[in-house]
Length: 346
Image (cartoon, rainbow, N blue to C red):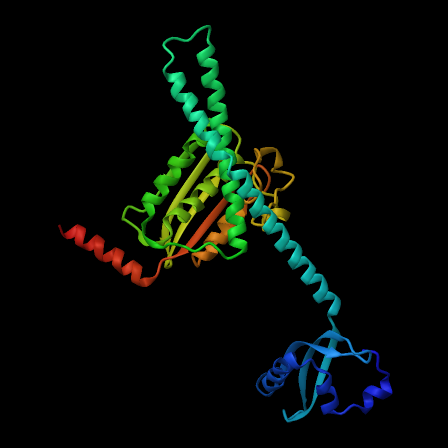
């Protein structure tokens, strides 16, 4: 702080307090008050240097007691964290700038998608009016349009994911919860992913509870959760693979498990799979143009629902399993039970 040892030794309490930034005094006083109950307190605040500038300090304070537990004096371990704070703020601003850029980019790229899709649909109508193909021209046009339709849908989905990541970072996604039937949500998700499953000739098995499971969730986001995990399983499983979806109610939670016998996940990267834009070297070959944000959205949307998601794998080429855990409150369970009892009595 620019003071000599002799100058610091001469300071009294009031002098030291006078050097603390006025805005941070309440934090320091609260930390001191907490010492009486917990004997340990840690607080960060700004303190004026001899040169007149403010530096950020981290002060971990403790009360030293004698053998009988009687307080003797207050001790403190003070660190200058000004540089740490500066780096953290720069990282925060950089992350914010990246998120803003992604949002603008996704919006700008999303806008041309609608007219492109409309033009293709118009060509589809005109092609259907052709009486007879001439030298295979109509068939070639249809094939080309099928490719264009497929690529536009992929691009639209990627841009929607980018926009969702941006909205989540800005806290702009609000769940629109309603009573949702688990079986229906799973059925809708399977229909959405079916073209990808069929294209890779995967076998999908689905197991759901015999009884209806109804709980509070955002139906659109719930379907998105399941679709993203099914899509992930399909992409990272070689052709003719097996994917298994199991849903159940366990300990007051709705649990949806999606397992595959695909390329698996390396142990050292298992903890990173939910990181934004993360793709392991082992999985990049199978990414098929993905951005590495599908699992990030799953993790964020689970948290918004008050739940969580987990990932497990036996290692490379041993498949993987992702599990979604969403809360099913006692009140909701009782309502579902009451509905089932009423149906059974009819």
